[in-house]
Length: 89
Image 1 (tube, rainbow, N blue to C red):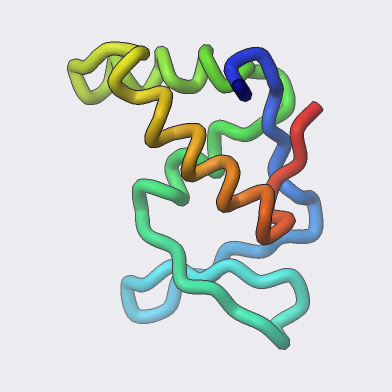
Image 2 (cartoon, one colour):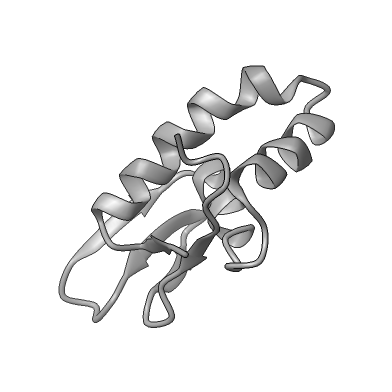
């Protein structure tokens, strides 16, 4: 479970918006397209909030529960970690 871990966005990751589409890159060589929902999650990865706190914040915004948000959030964060966009503290 990731609930008590604190995700931190990679410092060298750049987010670029081009023609209304968001892209993530480290060096411009390799580029990933990211959706706005994932981008919103990435912006919350400040290394201070736990995954559960982020889930609570999202749940409040979309009028849902932490229990409903947490599984999807954990999948997103696991994928972001796999691409080295975030690390867990």
